[in-house]
Length: 84
Image (cartoon, rainbow, N blue to C red; front, top):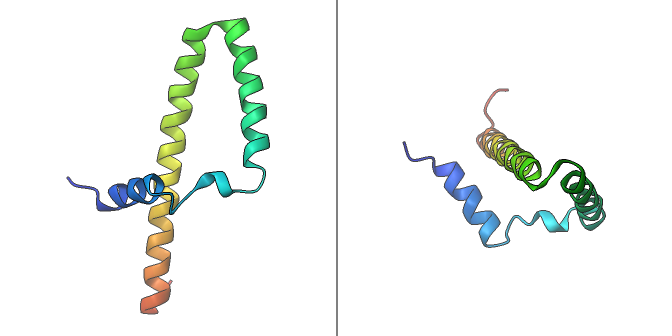
């Protein structure tokens, strides 16, 4: 099944119409995450860090898509004045 909203989300991210780098505190969080990743890698190894990163990436992608879908539906309800 073709998931139009998933494709639309990918397009919005790829074209920087939806740019998470603009979120307040984004750079600082990235620096803290990188520091944690460095520590995890040094203590548990690169294999564990890769596995953790893959799982976190899957979860983040699923959460972003769920939020995008919810926002899309919310916008339609508001525009069409549908009941909640």
